[in-house]
Length: 92
Image (cartoon, rainbow, N blue to C red; front, side, top):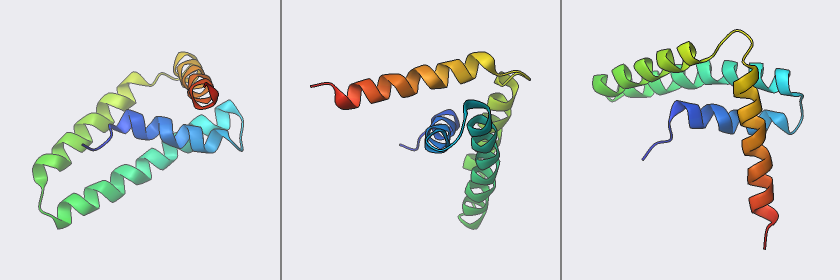
């Protein structure tokens, strides 16, 4: 099962967050998502998998609608998830 675009976005955010601040990480992760969608679309076109193209575009549009101009709540959610992941990693 492929990860959702939101999960991919969170993964990109976590990767960027290691070297950047919250705002920069969020912006860079969102830009990386656009490239991810383009690359995935290209792969699906080569496979002639038009159903997956439709699903990918729909999911990207829905994700774009859920992201507000300030994104403070989404950034906070990402930060909380990162903290929880770190706690889970080091818990015995």
